[in-house]
Image 1 (cartoon, rainbow, N blue to C red):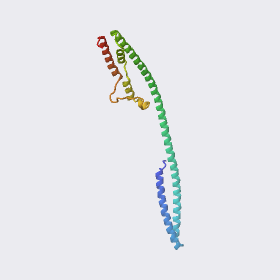
Image 2: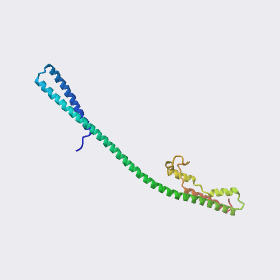
Image 3: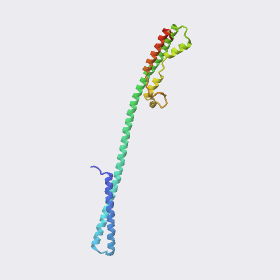
Image 4: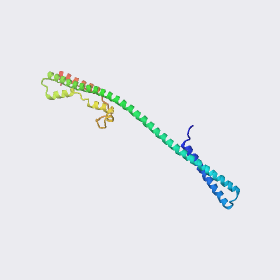
Length: 216
């Protein structure tokens, strides 16, 4: 059997309180009449019935007040139980997310290891390219000066700073590590390492061909 809601019990109690107030007012009027005619049998009977009705109503109000306390206790217990259930569910979700974050960290470690290897290879290829360009210039133009060597080797070495920092920026490194970690000057035009490398390769190849032709 379902228990009545606290609002229902409170409404019924308010009705009883209004009834009690009316019964007590009526009882006072009967008492005033009895002062004038204390032996009137009808008034005596009415006074007895009134007192009985008042007593019965008070008992019902006491029962309803007890029910209100019980309902308040139950609602408080239900609310506390609901909050606890919510807390437990949120804790379970947090633990699950922590597990997923650990798996994500493993993938990040693997990706960073691959990235580290690629960056080392990039540096090595840049040094080898610069050396090959220097050999080309020295043998094609034995009288080449230091400025010519430095200019050619600088062209041979590829700087990927801008596309690399752009990639990190667009990947959300500021959110993952902290704002201000990197500075990207151009947010509107996205550069890619491959595009920069391709253009640099074309530029260097053109300069080396010019060296062989004696034009540079």
